[in-house]
Image 1 (tube, one colour):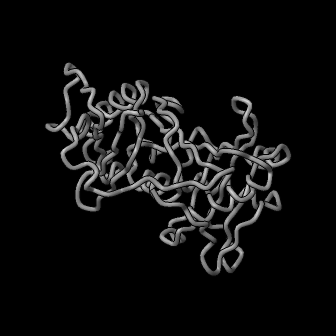
Image 2: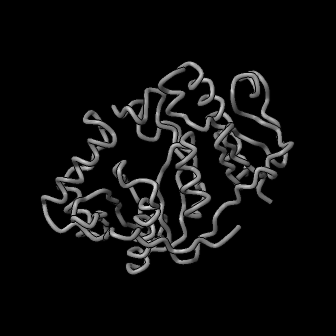
Length: 274
């Protein structure tokens, strides 16, 4: 595993705390544009105002013209006696994507947390969205802390989340120490038993999950495409992975690698802890 270097905002962009009600209202509009107007988990402007008064972070990314093109929001508090920041929401407008601005927002947020004495950051991500898994695990160096089925309910009203529930990984990112990225070497999953994946290569619900030292859970490279074009197959993938994550992560296994792919399925490697 390699240490993660700080990622600054790209040239021409600035990240700073929100400074006005107009900017907080723009964050609400950005949420609508990203997750849809029917999104039930939208953060209102009042919470964007109040959160930072108690250690939270409400910040925006602005281009050279001063237009907001991204934001990040989170809350700070005690979790099991440890000062912790929960990074609840982040979005970047499509025209500003592909420049590592999402990474820069996370690193800026982490630096603010260091200033406050926070020891760890948490957030959630959908295990089935491969590009987010690659960002969180391989680029930012977060780890998988927990798997929670339907963390935000069955349907948030967002077209991005879809109708198949909101299973989530809870990520854990070191603040008081330097994070290290998970490896993404395809050789690590060669020959490893696939316990969940596409139809025809995963175990049926009636078969017992093997107790090997290492197992692989495969996910589609583009889950949102599958949601839009083959909902039944997306459900098969998701239920198989849910079963595997629930079983293995509750019996002493950890996510030890994530292998992305542009041409085939992406893969999580789960390894028994020693």
